[in-house]
Image (cartoon, rainbow over all chains, first blue to last red; front, side, top):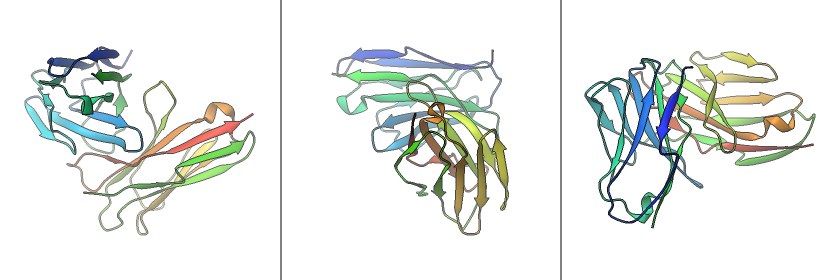
Length: 113
Length: 112
């Protein structure tokens, strides 16, 4: 089944404890991205990647890192999480070219205490 | 920063009613507009990708139109059903190399 998977789906952590949210897609998509969803603010892009070893900042990259060592994986790293990073996170992928629909992962709900 | 506006923010309709909502985007430079449907506790799913002025797309009871010259797209739902209850997102881009910019969505509630 074609899909985007994220892990973990739910995470409660404490300030400063490094964490990684994994994202994997099995559709051979070149383009992957991370979004955060906060009430009243809509989906905001954190980082995106046009292909392996190519990443770029989105609208809200502060406090996050990403890597794209393989085409299928695009992990989101929070080196030192803070409470303002409490949010719902989505990973998405598509083939290159914005004429193509994006496929979203199931979401990761993160709480930073 | 591109600005994508959706209206209304939320909408309550009775089962069987038809409804529509709007996505507004900069008209100066258009490349593509996407519509997504996002049900509670699920992830957004693509409805349409629209690329040409005058485009009309349809999927069942849901359809969308596009006017790139004036910078808006309408999403129509005919004969709303409770299962249509969701947040409908539009996303815009002005080039093939820049990411999609999402609006904040229209939250539709269909009351049986």
